[in-house]
Image 1 (cartoon, rainbow, N blue to C red):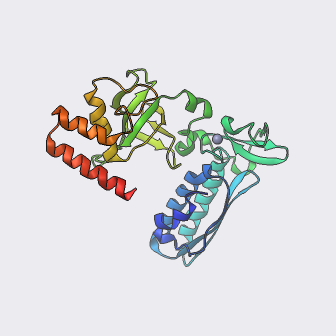
Image 2 (cartoon, rainbow, N blue to C red):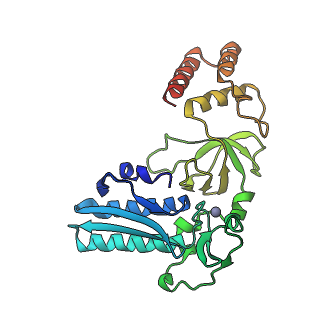
Image 3 (cartoon, protein in one colour):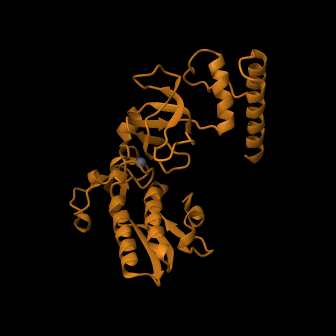
Length: 287
Ligand SMILES: [Zn+2]
């Protein structure tokens, strides 16, 4: 798994030791694992120790093994409940990509996959027709964490945001939104710049491939570091036309040429261009 080694940085109260976590499942369940650790982290706020020992796929679903010591009974109950929820969720989330999935039998091998990942290396699966006895009180439709995930079909039909950026200066109490150049959005011409409605949920993969907002689902295209993106934004604006499909915002990947063009046009204040260039050089050095 790609992110599992960073878990200890993200959940400092959980007392991971230094050895690598034994994980044997695909990355599509990372979001589920993060949500579980977030709950465990909250439950541990009153003290005690918690150690996630193993993460694995077992009979098609997610199983985690952990040890907790010196914690209050209600904290332990909260962690066990969070683990049950994580396991129930895993039966509806594609283990490979994190989109909506269902449990399938591939010649005796159980695996939760989306439509796009059914028919791959394991062949065509036979869908499991419930009910899940162990999870019969769990409804994926009533769980926003799962319900907001796109199916493979919905994902394929969704508009695309190229050069997307999450707005960082969100006011307190307001959910952030995304900026970008849109393609396939009915209310906006292709290649026009705009922003989405507030974010409901974003894919946990790095980089994320989709975002659910109040007004709908978007696929996420290319992402640029913020300073590079700002230069591309002004260079594109200078052309007075939308981004052409398949072309990068700003017209090319030559950022230096964009800076020269912005300076020579006189359309922006010199100090603004200096600031953007400084931030861009710093971004390049740290990359
Ligand atoms: Zn999938």
